[in-house]
Length: 354
Image (cartoon, rainbow, N blue to C red; front, side, top):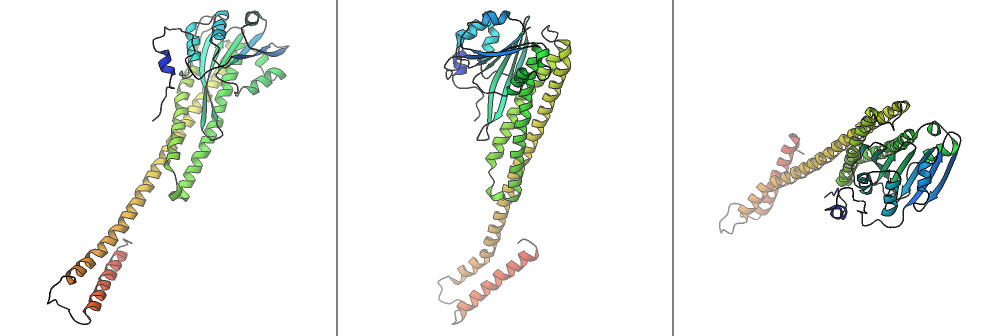
């Protein structure tokens, strides 16, 4: 059975007032670390923070600041961040919920974007992590549960001043980060498509060794990809229509590109899911065909032995006077039984039942 709510999270949230900033995931522990990038067209600096010291100065600094929060266990640091950057407590509550549906919310001074970052683990299982973005006028805050992400290409662009990112506003940095996450969806879908093609080939070449549960697992992964792709399309469409001052007119064309990518991800995942359903149906059909072949073979064997059993039963009766009770009677009955069996086999073969 699939469980879409982690054990302990739902129970720990029950009864709390709206906007409660608390650690709803019992397995979270340790401090939150912050990776900082501050940049403009002419410079780029980076560093790390382990507490709230310096957040006020970063909030008022020149240029664009990107603060990447790793770990969500330090609730006090997140509460202090909310105060300094004037983030609504309801937004922090959503950020702290690791199973939140991807969404976009627009506030007066910032945007809240929640998406899922998907990867392929060493055992070819999907790994999913929630990434939350708070996009302000001159800052972008990203919140992750643990270190490790797909943002290294953006970091390299900032360090080496490649592309437009250092010459654009904070909204362009946010859309670049979201775009990298969506681009990684295609990598995941390509891996799933390869696994699906391999399963289909195995089913066609060696059906006896095929495992139906592998198709089911792959189908559920594709279902999850579709599940998180639908809200992404809504987010991209809402960003295109947004009248928030955070979204600059020159960035609209790039948000349209993100929308196109999300639609492509959705269509690809839906196509692969339909193919996986077809493969599973083919697996069920193969099982039914093999079962029918087994039942046909057993039926033919039983049919052949019915008259033989009758003959043996008749001549096995313990009567004193039976026809054929002569010295060669036994051999006659055996020969007669063989003739009956061979005649039935010839009849079945002529009608192509064998």
